[in-house]
Length: 346
Image (cartoon, rainbow, N blue to C red; front, side, top):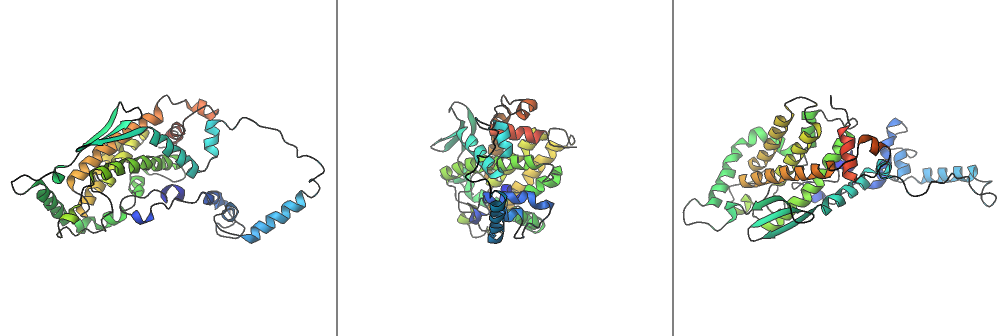
């Protein structure tokens, strides 16, 4: 699972951006059956996750002995297969890192970003359907003559929210990374049983990160800590704009995505609980002193609408399970959605 979670960082852990897990380590997924994942003869060593010249030499000498009579005497016996592997079967064979690159490319192609003045929009690929529109928040507009100004009030509200820090400290610190564990707690997500759900969530975070950074860069809103020394956030403020909130975007994206995926298969409280979790994690970012309330509300709106767009891509004209099993043409996201949908939920 490290291939999924090690690669996708959020706004609180900027230093680890770009640390996408090496594809070579995927071979270690199969090493749980024995041999020791860290030994010189393990599948992990064979995959290139660690260097083992001893293993390489042992494999080389074995190959030399097994094939000693073949070179130059007879051609290998091959039952040819031509024309490439069918789409769905290929996706089954590719590594999770490669599939993630395919999902990301598909997602990038599906949207456009347009902005002018104080308005930014995320549009579909054709530029004709508006996915989400955000306006510059009131705290970042020219101040009126009255006091407190919207900015002063917004900063004051952040300072007041800090009163909850003592009871939320553990949550705040544990939610710096994308809070997969909190969603796993709520839904009993098992890395083995729900491996494709985790992969679906990681793919969603790719679109979330790409989209939210476009908005953040356009608005370039200063954080509350840039406006007042009284804020004193619990964590170092991320090095990008405050609006909209990345955590709120991520969590509402995940919440709505999982509602669409699971529906009522593990109880009728699923949607209520997922939305409550998304709000609490988002709220903690204000309590930590990293965001304004307007950032959270905008992130909620963006995340919810991104989820709708994502689900639409994954389910639009999707082939049946039988068609996918037979190797029929399918987009990477449709394949992944089908895999996650068919996992055991109760």
